[in-house]
Length: 339
Length: 281
Picture 1 (cartoon, rainbow over the protein chains, first blue to last red):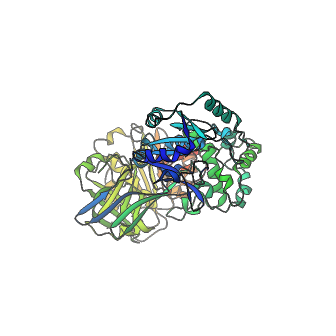
Picture 2: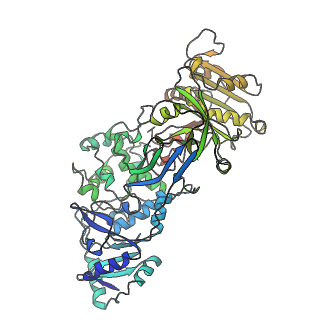
Picture 3: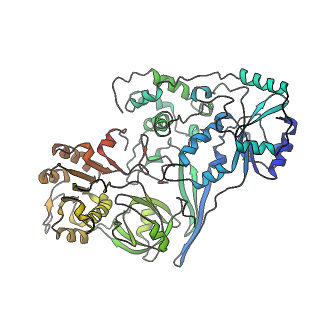
């Protein structure tokens, strides 16, 4: 099937009657995923500066509100299970959702807020015809037309998008749109786009995890962090970073509990009530970020917590480049150090 | 209320706000369940913790000081150090607080059956050890375990927690209780000296024994070699770690040591397990 680009806005308006529709929109010059009111707001051609994780895991969300007095307690929580469609995610970002699933649904606890959104959101991704110079998705088990995490994949074929339903939810959604079948020419154009999309940069991850196993006390970390200013842009803009804080926004005994994105790059992140801090300096914090993504996450979930989207490289104010960091790590002599 | 949502606290009523130590910095809070259903659902084991919420102020994690053998209540001994703990200290009896839990793992009391147990505690980290001792001394369980030795130290007598329990335990003949303070004080009849030295003097046998140790990092650092000299292997030494925690569910990402989350995979680890993890705690 195909969708003509000129008809996208109308189709999104049609979908918006039944679903909440998330799409990349221009927000004061930055592209971010927002629930749109009109299909014309969607800027499908541009990748978002902010990662789409905010669709399922908002930067700030109320967990519940409450009031309490001597007689008793009132507490209200509402999970957001609105039927939604998210359109325009890049395949790397769609894949990041698969990684987040590991975190928010574990053997003991289910994050009801994340999972309600997850279960009710159909992911329509858009393949990358022209990956950016900072992309390295093919190095981390993804690719510009990877379908992992997508319910529907769109491929830009010029005047139109080729539409491929990947999952049952995707088929159901596409079935509602009465789209014309793709002809041989459209299919050929899509194949050509897929074949010619070149991811410029590569990182060789072979053996990296094992290397990091023996690098916790390595002197490499002493220097590496020195130019990092600890702004945490890399974590906020990372589609797989999921650390959060929980705070009460309350006056006296009435208010709400809110969770907000947080970051391991901040000094207070691990500060104990006693004043002890296991990650005292930027060295420990930068090491934590690298280790978490390329070592600890692999141990825990058998996957690297990076999808190669390149946002951390593109937006770092001091030009820290994770590709270079990983290459340098691989080049270090770790001798016989353990742990 | 949706009980499948692990972020929602259950309401409990503060029935006792007790000043535990002479310096008034530690209070023990006794809480009663407001709803019978919550009481039935709150199944915990010694060593677990819970998030304690003061409405309007926020929540913070604390070890559970009561034992599952004391039904109907939960106890927490809390030092006044931050916003939530200070607000707790100021709460009047009868107030409603929120409790989220039980969270984390526990001392492996099932696996310890048939073994001698040595419990070593220092300062106010004694809270979950109180839970463990009460659990082991329960008449229905005491026979499952061998000798029980408790070595507990504080800077001075006024800083020892649970004075009523200490008196009660000292009168029993199925527990060897050794209390110690750092320096001699008039009227003190117990031992004097730091925990590592007292452990060396007591010299508990490592044979068929497990040691549970909880206290300030410096105490653990100097007690560990003493235990090793006595023949305790890293598998026979069990510790409980403290970390900054928020969600308590292994999701918010701040309490990890290597690939383990202290809130979910811990807080209880054997020394053998800790030796495999990065030294970042």
